[in-house]
Length: 299
Image (cartoon, rainbow, N blue to C red; front, side, top):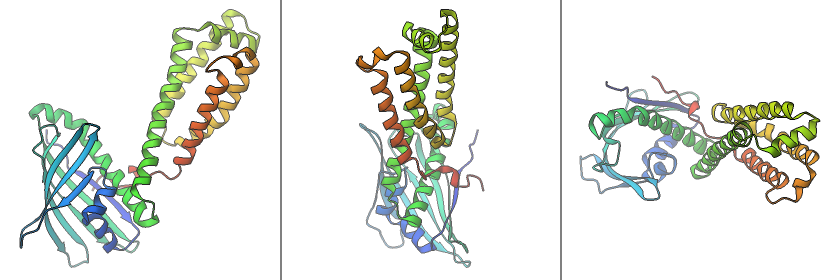
């Protein structure tokens, strides 16, 4: 089955020339485009496409190297510009074998409409086509996220590296808090029904053993659901603000229910204080994060 090309469009409120320079200069381009770690132009021959090489570092020990050709640019009657691109790699580790696409820059009253469309062939035969069903949406997302990083950079001046640090810090915190809440609800409460969990609930609420068991089970289920919400709910700042309120209350409740735990190693007071600090860091980095949602993904 032939998959649709990747299409991304965004309005950037600056003159066309600034968008052109930021996307056509290889040193500037590699700063904001998540798909490339570096881009290097090769010496250009007369009347020949501009050839270049690129790299994308995937992990500590994996770097994909590729080649490309920029077929020049066209200046259209309405004042817009466009450039076409051919790219690929000979490395078998890459899901992409070869592709083609274009950039287009359209002057608008509010600024510049910047868009791209590209498609590619995959490696690994039929297996590669199956892998691409997962990989292609990631490529589209990375392209759209990169476009928004470019927009914020040339509109407001925040460097791409700073934006990406904040973005990926928030993604790590999201995964951490999701794991934390699901683990705390599932393991010590729903699966193990730890005696200390029951004792704290029974003591704090003056409940019988059976009633404390039911309450611990309900709390565990609520914590697991909150962990799932961390993965699905988009407005993470709402969750962070909720945690800024919840962690101090949980600390006080734990101390009131079992004061002796305050002298234990890795006790609820130090544990919740650490979570409160991480939540505060999340609030600092989460304000006005770059997002792929600011782009149009269909023509």
